Image (cartoon, rainbow, N blue to C red):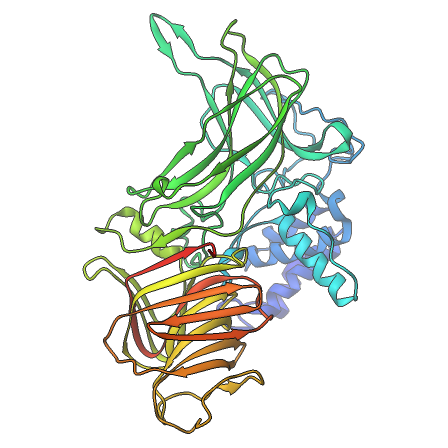
Length: 537
C-alpha cells in the first residue's frame, strides 16, 4: 500500500495529464510484477486494486506473468491437461470446494474478439493465435512452420486445456462438463461429459420432448458484442453457405446408451435473435465413431442472415428402454471447406437483422450503407481511398461477380478480391485518365497500353501492397459515370482474370494466395446491387 502511495505522489494522474497516461499506469504494472510476479492470482489482485487503467494494466501484467510461468500459472498442480492424464471428465457437485481461488481460463474458454481490418481474424481463439505467433517466430528463424493439426481443421483441440471457444449454449436439465483431454491412443479432443440426459418419453399423458445439448463456438460476434461501447466490433463471419462442415465424433465405450449426435449452426435471423439449426442426427453406439458432414445451403440463410456459431447437438438416442444417457462424447475436430457459395444482396425491407448484416462487413470508408430503399450497397469516401471488405483468408480460388457497379463520382474506383486488410488486395479499378487520376506504379509484367500519358479512360488490374498501387494489366474502356456495370473476377492460383462487358484482362501474381472481397471508392462514391461469390467452374 505504501508503494502505491509513493507512486501516486510522484507519478499520479495530476502529474501526467491526459485520458490515460502511460507513465502512471506503467508504474503500477511494475509494482504488480515486483510484488506479485511469482503468482498469477496475486499479480491480478494487485494490479486491479491499484486502480487507474485497470483493463490495460491487468492485460499487460497477465501476459507477462503467463509468459514467465507458462500454463503452470493457471494450473492447480494436479497435472490436469497433460498428455499422460486419464481421459475422464468429472462433473463436480455444486457443493464441492474450488481447487484454486480463481478459474481464469474457464469463463473465457479461449475466446478472443479482435476489431481487425482483416475480417476473418476478428472472431478468434487462443489456440489459433498461439500457432500463428509460433509460426511467425519459426519463419523469422528460417525454420518450417508447424504443420496444421488434424489436416488443417479449424478446431483441433491440440493444445493442453484449450477448448477453442466451445461452450454449452442451450439451457439444460442434464449435467454437462466440457474440457480438452486425450482419449484412446493419446489423441487430443474435446470431451463432452453428460449426466442424466433423459430420452424422449411420455409423461402425464403427453409427449415430453427429449433434451438436446448444444455445444458450440462463435464464428461471428456473439449477441451483445455489436453494442460494445466505446470499442466497436469489426469483422466478418467465418462460415458461409456452400461450405461443408465436417466433424469427427466418438462415443466413450462406457456410455450407458446410444447418443444422437448432429452438426449444428446458430443463425442471426430476421428478428436479430439467434436460432439454432441442425442436420439429421446420427445414432452413436458406445465405443463407435463417425464423421459428420453437412453442406450449409443458402435456403437456411436468407439475405442478411449470418452463421454466428457452429458445433454439435447431442441427445439421448435410446428408443427401447428409456434409460438416461450418462457418458462422454468426444469431438476430435471440427472444420469446414474453403470456397463459399453466397449472394450478398439487399434485404427486401429493413429489419432487426440488417444491422447485424452491416456489421459483417469491414468498413474502411467514411460511409457504408445497406440502403433498402434504392436496393444498393453504398460506399463513399470524402478524401483518398476507402474500402469495404467481406470474407476471410480461407477463400482462395473463387469467382466473384459484382452486379450494377456504378461510380457516382471520384476515381479510381472499383472492386477487390483476395482482400487481406485495408492495403493488401487485388483490385479492378476504373481509371478516369488525365490529371484527376492517381498514378499507378507499373509491374514489370504489365501489358499497359504504350501511350501511358493518354487521358483515355481505362480499367486497370491492380495489386494494392501497403501504400503502393501496382498496375498489373490494363485496357482502354469507354466507361461512364452513373452507369451500372457487371464486373467478374476469377482467381485461380497465380492467375487473375477480370471482365467488364467485352473487356477482358489477365495477369499473374503470387503475392496474395487468398482473401475476401471488397468495394473501393476514392474521392467520391460508388453503388453496387449485389455480389455473388462461388467456386470456379
